[in-house]
Image (tube, rainbow, N blue to C red; front, side, top):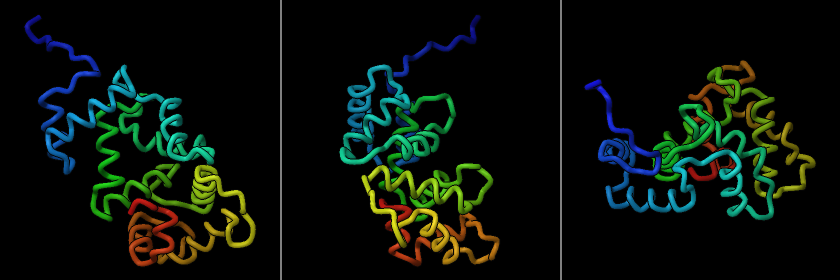
Length: 190
């Protein structure tokens, strides 16, 4: 009876959340409150579902088809796997993909590409992600070196130091850091 905590709605920003977000992002309390106000304006329930997530990407890529890409990105953002992205997950993901240091941003990219969650990116996973990225930006020329499977094979061959035809997180990060062309393709915000 005495252990009941007052429930807060998912639209309220608590002092505890602000402290956590300040500690894990480079945002000030005022910036966090501004991000929160915008998030709640766009997602009055305090949760971003898959459909709305795709709609947001559609605004940024009007000539593309974001559905495939968003399937992978949404899974990466939804860290507690409850089928929606709350404000904390959203802001932490935004920070990691845009404000974090290069290693952090590449780690997020790696986690999105590692669809099987086995700590490795194989040819199939990389091909699926490259296809999704092409769809996102409206790239229709997929011939020659632009063929997603060929491009994935070339990238893996170039970055795979261990020779197992898969990329570990260390190989992915080192490869992207050392090759600006690959980094621009695989982690465009880095």
